[in-house]
Length: 630
Image (cartoon, rainbow, N blue to C red; front, side, top):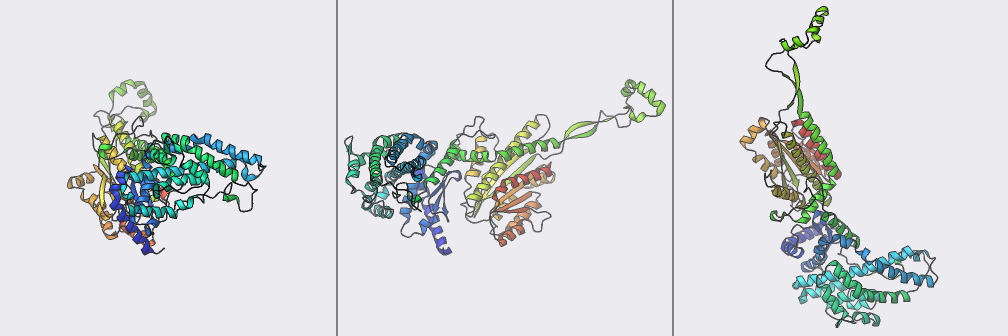
């Protein structure tokens, strides 16, 4: 597609999101959820682990959809998100609660197959029948989930009730063949389900076949069934109450109409190239071009379920529970996302723990020191008295060297001279080119480094109980893109909740929404923060500053970035950068110029598309720098 059209669509989407950000936060109740355009995707796609909703760029290229209708589509996709967050396991296991209905449908269809003598036909075998029935029942539930979503949007966003926008929504539904004019051409059980949405959107009682209208307009509790359904499902019921209503009130009518369709459908032997037409050759419903598929929704629910499970891993609360960090702007979902990534990096973290123990063991060196105040070579009178018989024997053969008659050096444990403080700065690229795969690798690397350094601090604290060790490790995290800002500051003693909240933000707020790539500014910021006292401490070996940068491209100003990196190196800092993702030859050359040109040793590594290597390479670089220190 024309790059200019893509750029215009991307700008339109960016302006749209800036304008609607506050409304989206109000609607979802989740200030941590971010929104990005997906150039290749064609559907709205929720990625809970990334705290991101991806909007299809195609919707902004479609001039038949104005921004308000795109907002309606987005609201419709997010309408059930709060319910999903509350009960992801319930939604994932929903079909288990409908096993009785599945069996009822299957038994009816298998009975027809048996009676008409088609039991031996491959496509009518019980497993195939059960797959077909599950699809039909899933379709039933999916239609009413969309109805619940649209009911919520109309209720919470009354602007869409205005005539102008209602007409556009009706046009969109018509394009999906979800309009009154299409109902009579559909199978009866599907027309019954779709009629509720038609009645809501088109604000009219839809024309229906006799059997369907008997169910749709039937009286229940003194109300027409469709009116009762709109009223009840508009109440934001819990999943259990919603399914109870569907099971007791709507499913019997769906089942009755489905049975009529089954009775009327002719069974036939398999024909060439006909296997994919459906078990009974009943047409599928029209699929929404922008709605996430059932499989994509299931993936999102699985991610929400993983995030909601309490993760008992080292570094979290001892009992695995989440902390109340709302005062620091961090919600429970962000904590779950953080610990989810922590669990992913559990193996690497264990390896780092072993490395820290070996490192501390080598720092405790055994060296020869004098015993008492005597110089080596002076006779030790006590030794002569205790070993006098050996001294007499040694006089005969001159074997005095074997005797311990002189003051001896002894091996005594002594800690190697170490710095008092190590400060680790991690600079994370948050520019717009950081796609979901790069962000995933960057988050893994970041959480592995932060928590591994926490583990090292714990080992150091344990060592202080039996040694004069003073060393402490501190970490800070910056995001950079068009601008830069600090997400995590060096330690907050006595404020562990604040420390934890900043670690969580360092991972969850990394969303690739920072515009262009300008790392020169953040490198200079770190360099400017080193004052004269710190410089003296660095020269005396009392302070070590480690700076790691992770970026997916090349700096917009490579010359300035090179000068900033050189400033840090001249100040005695240990600096290293990683370039991830696919880059042009020119970008790689610029990266080499920034980090490896005119220096005594390399300070940058281009990883390329092997993103899975980033966490281990960052930890390996951290190990190498620590070995140099110790």
